[in-house]
Image (cartoon, rainbow, N blue to C red; front, side, top):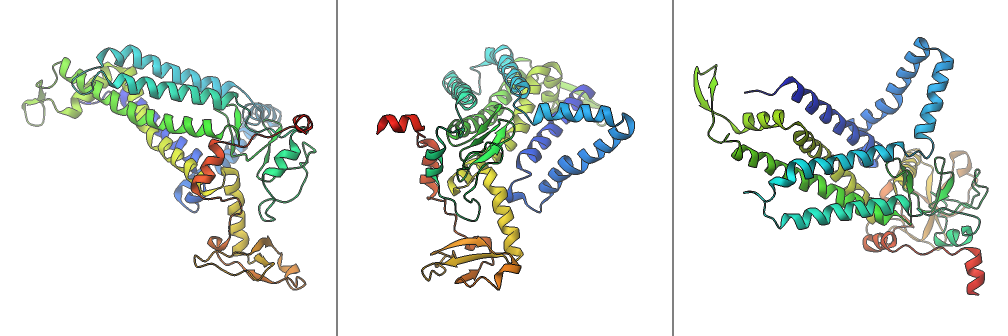
Amino acid sequence: MGVSLFTATWVSVLSVFAVWVFVMILGPNRMFRDTVVERAYIYLTVTLSGRIGHFLRVTIGESALARAERAGIALFGRRNPIFQIFGIVLYLLGVGVFFIEAAPLIPNRYVGSWQWITISLALAVNMVSYTLACIKDPGVVSAENVDSACALFTPDQLLYFEAKCRTCRLRKPARSKHCSACGHCIQMMDHHCIWLNSCVGLHNARYFLLFLASFAAICVYGSYIFATILLELRHTRGLMDSMVWDDDAMEMVKLSLKSSILFLMDENVLLAVITVLLMVLAPAILFFAAYQFRISMLGYTSNEESKWLNVADAIKDGVVFCIHSDGGASTSSGVMDGGVFQIVEKEDQEADLRAKTLVTHLSQVKNRYDRGAWQNLALLMFPPQIQSRTSKLHIH
């Protein structure tokens, strides 16, 4: 008893979708630099998109391609609820399938009735955290709060400098980034998330992290629950001791576990789709959640990761120095301390007479914004409240 062409097709499609999600989420990250994941990301976002653009230019013409590009900017370059609505609809459909197809079979011989407590808790935490991540202010920098925002972090002269945003025309707080989709500078911006239709920044990062953790738990836990449902159906449908004809052996043989599961997947398509989707999404979501928690505890954001990659390239070029102000030196861990890290271009190095040491490896650079793992996490869990000028005047 084999799998039908229909089942094989949608399992293949879901598997390709999971690989695409994994590459698009983790491809730009530093841990995958110079790996097949980064190369796949570059191919999908640069090479493939360029080839598609060339093909469309030849087939449909420049004017039609320009309209398509404007549509792409409207979808991906501006705040747009389409992906948010799409994600919510998919999520609710999955929950609906669970309550229609799977819930009547809980409890069963594999899971007890107490599982409803954890199922309800996981869904509630996930939905509430997602809602809060969507609606809470991520940390928009405005004329009213820019002074307080700038006071949070001091420019380190390596990643951030005293500057004014060319778009907002406001002072640019250290660790902030202007989001072209939202049209604002965002304090301690991590990234713009199309599924939230908002940025992830200092003031909603805690809800985003909670959403990621709970969603990863749902993917893993849901895979287990749905798998037990298929096993329960195997019992109730009498497939445990079923006999089928084996053409190779030319005799009746006992139906294998694999064949019985494939048979049930053919008969319960919606149940099977959600089960496979959870299983293929679980590794990608788990990896992304672990990555987000890791960089949060190390004291940097996804946005700052690209900046650190630029610093690593500058170190290879021999232009990053530790400028010593008080005779600082390397610590036992190899980190240079007691100075400020700056880029000094090669043509300026001879004229620069300051006491300085050439940085030869990224591990020697001290991240000024790293307060220690738990304090870094506490900063996101309990972010400082930014006061506007009017509230300051009221206080004083």
